[in-house]
Image 1 (tube, rainbow, N blue to C red):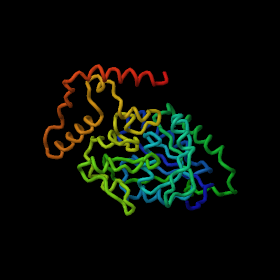
Image 2: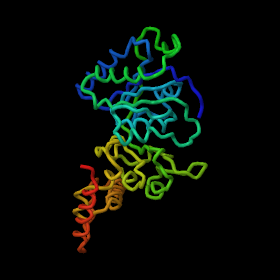
Image 3: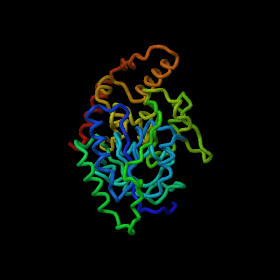
Length: 313
């Protein structure tokens, strides 16, 4: 790891992709509360997931040397790994937005990856706050737990006290985000994806080589990943979108599919086929995988009972 100055704090406010009036009001109120604070610099950017890798907003984020607090309309885990995918790295900090299991995970050291600075990145999910004031109190709680900085160390804001806003044209993007602390490099994603999204790095590890080659709406690789390391932050299923409170089983265990005798691999294959048809200009709707005609229903029901028995209710 490289050493960086960690007494500098930058707060990054990521606007929502298509904000409703209530979200617009939250963003405006947050910005008003954050501006003119001496403890940190505030940066306002478009939706984090939609940023172009070589755009001005990502360039500014890469230039940040100290700790970062990110406010986004995303699950903290997915927001953190979106940043990492754009070479904005650090250690995921504990926040109330993280579930208990994920809080335990972040207590462990990161994998030994080159270029990861010794700093913390806290990611707050704005969807969990009813008003801007509660979010600001959480930020103040993070600041209160940090060592007292040297005089003037945190006064790195703009001279007029206003937030630095980065405007750039964005589009709604869809691409996989990989949790490298979970990834076991099994290469299932590389073998399964037919769109050329994944490639091999110089060390033989799989990585997201062509993110924009992914077909919008296709989350199939997330379902077949044995470690649950692949996320699609804008997916409607919280387990795929990066909700830390959803277990790995959440990606694979769907009660309606168990009753129908459909396994996750079949679902993933169907989603991949949908994406292929879409790419060819055909129907977006594919037939659901057929349930087995054997007497496996009882077996699947027994499996369901066993899964429910293991749940901590």
